[in-house]
Image (cartoon, rainbow, N blue to C red; front, side, top):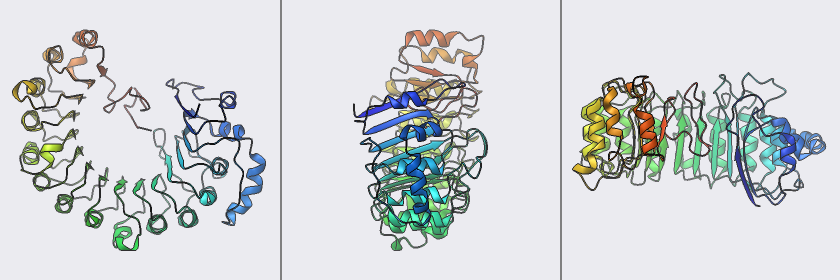
Length: 463
């Protein structure tokens, strides 16, 4: 066996892979993916505590050292843990063959300084000369925490030696500034994917002059970076090679940058969630050339039905390519916008309308019958109607056969469709056994494979 992927869905006490399980893993494995697992169990499993004690002083001196692998031929390691620490990183880094490291932790309290990831731990990865993909994520599901022990110096040393990186994802590095992130972009000529989240010190200055970076980024995600503005977008799009641009939670992004976005010829995914854009910005995008397939406009309060009309009927490429659209949490979206999508959005297979209180049964009817109106329309596969208060209880008749034959996921929580006096959903479930009906407020796709489902808070994230 060369690959193993296992996830425990039970979320209660003791829901983790323990040490005895780890000892039964075959040493032929090249890829391991486990969720959840304890940091202490991984360290004990590797039986490298002596190596750690010998290696740590060398790591502090930032001097790469030769190491021996710990029995595995591991190339890819993906773990969700209780906490990421220096000792864990050092132990993992000693495996010579790793080309991909994907670690996420979800602390339920602020980690102690001596039991956390610091610059020392990050610098220990500097001797891994084969690493192509690195993902270090501090989740905030349980409390607002970050990697406060990592600063610019740790990022400088790490990036100086990890020059083979092609993809970097860094969530929660609140003490790393423009200089630290710039060192990664400058030192990794093969870097194609750059993703950061909750980078409180990241500003437009890092992208002022892209010519100083030898890499050519095709995927950039700057999520919840409050100091990023439209100027960054204008600089990033100047290369013309962007395929993915995610600006989730960057509230200073405005209409002005959509002119440069609209000139891109390779962009397929755009996330503007929470941005300060209006119908005018969508009109610019609707006339543009990007072949965008996935667009998120969630929480863009300046968008109305008119903007959706201009997006699809502007004569540009997006009206012919868009397959996934998120219009959640927008007060100005009503049945008029949905009717536009039903008629003009021929490629749409995923549609999110959560918290759009003006959406009524008229919208559901338009979506249910759009295949009859236009034979070239794709079948809708996922539909999120969570908290759409305008839907009536009898709307469930439109979810029965022969309507929505391609639907595989439906979110109808907190609507009249799942009220006690509306037993029709169980009937629909029996009629369409392939259909997942979510009542918990999750994002589209919960219960699918590796996605994290929490019925209490409705949070979902992908591996």
